[in-house]
Length: 242
Ligand SMILES: C[S@@+](CC[C@H](N)C(=O)[O-])C[C@H]1O[C@@H](n2cnc3c(N)ncnc32)[C@H](O)[C@@H]1O
Image (cartoon, rainbow, N blue to C red; front, side, top):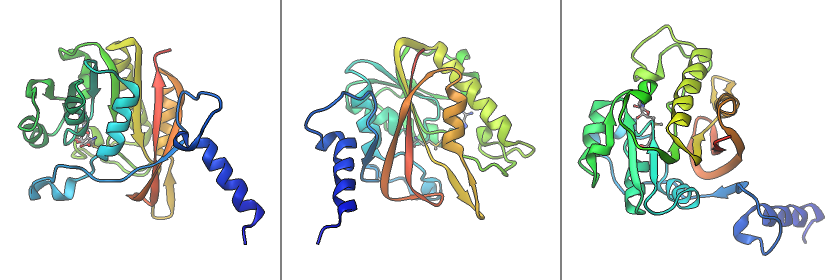
């Protein structure tokens, strides 16, 4: 027997999930999605413990949704190069910056245009020779409110704090804004974090900080079978140039 509440919920889910919606108002941002996790490329075992990549499915969705063939897709926290590799596969120009030399050297071997991945520091983004950006897709290094290691130097420096983290994020994304075309979009994948009974509202705090620079178009909740940090969803925070 179907209960009343169940069918109402189903109808509401049908409405918010674009794939099921037949007609209705056009929304700039999809409200939620369920996507498969995973990456085509298996990392060498030396990186196994550092595998915190964005899922290929999410990057593919965002690159297709927010950029056109031939455009510049940039990732200031390139990591294992998911954004750059998928951008190249989809006929975009993939550019990025990665702080870890080990990761940057590894990723360069997989790229068609290895020179477009800079081994460097996104806090100094404007010092690099980058083209104007159409889409910036990224997932930043995470930190808990009580952590003291600086995530922008591979967690190797102590004496850091959460307000400084948010301030650095603001500074990096204001540099991204200066390199972005007027029609450009910024998409940040981030999650809130549960640790020792405390929640760091990281995704929400990043959204607030970056909204000082970009126009916040809205968030998409990405539902995963498995994620981490005490959650099985993350957020895609979508922004445009004001
Ligand atoms: C969450 S990971 C990104 C994962 C990436 N999206 C992928 O799929 O592989 C964040 C990355 O940012 C890099 N990072 C941290 N601070 C940085 C900085 N100041 N400049 C550039 N990259 C930085 C880290 O080394 C890490 O690889």
